[in-house]
Amino acid sequence: MVTERLVQFDTGERRIIRIPEAIFFDVDRCAVDTAKAFDLAVQATAYNTPLTAKQLYDEYHRTKAAGESYNVVGFINHSLEGTGYSWQHNVEADFVERGHQHDLLMKDARKIIEYAVAEGVLLAMFTYGASSPDRHDQQWVDAKTWQLAKIAAAGLDDLPAYVCNRREKGAKITKWYETGDGFYLPDSMSVEEGIQTVARKIILLDDKTDSFNGINAHILGIRITPEDEANQLDFQRGRLPGGVVAVHGMTEALGAIKAIRASLRQLS
Image (cartoon, rainbow, N blue to C red):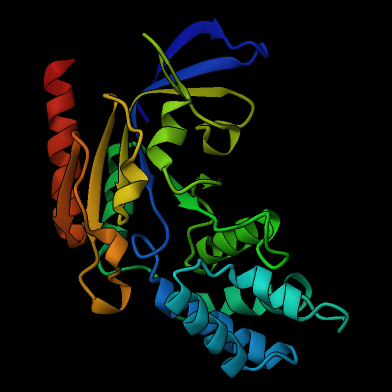
């Protein structure tokens, strides 16, 4: 990775490494086939606990009809309370193993990852975890666990990852920006352990329109509509803010990344 190493330290006296840009890759229905991952989670849960596949699918359809988010691990742990079973102790390892036996990546998502590796660009998984303080079965720790489990099951746990606690990822990322400097990335997205990574620009890949709400001029967005109908949802439509392009599938997304990076090189 090409970096500009400066004699500079952050407020915690950690060395800073600066990079031209970072690519943030959304997980659900973007990098990872969420429908397939959920099916494997249902199989692993029904095999290892008293919960049945019907119970899990019924809850999925109920939440979908009600327009609610489905905190998968939260529902499983809540339903298993008092039984001695839990996602962490009885399901997760089997789910990850099943994921390794299937290709959970969306069509051509690996092309994005391979491109970033070949180009030496920091690519980090950046995902939203659905939780609600008003519901006992939608705790943040369970939401984060489910997102990280999908990343591991898809074989992407060697990449940096960050689980966001709000849908508006653009607004979250903007808060990391310091004027005239860049985006101070969280520790889980650092290029080296124990140092502070600062990126001048962010390229955000996501399938959800509202993920780009709150972006600033230094965030370049690519909204990716999945090619398969199973992963197409209403919130992937709608008007996009400036600085965001709409593409269909990963091949177009890769082309958009290359065009954005070429433009950034011309401006630098």
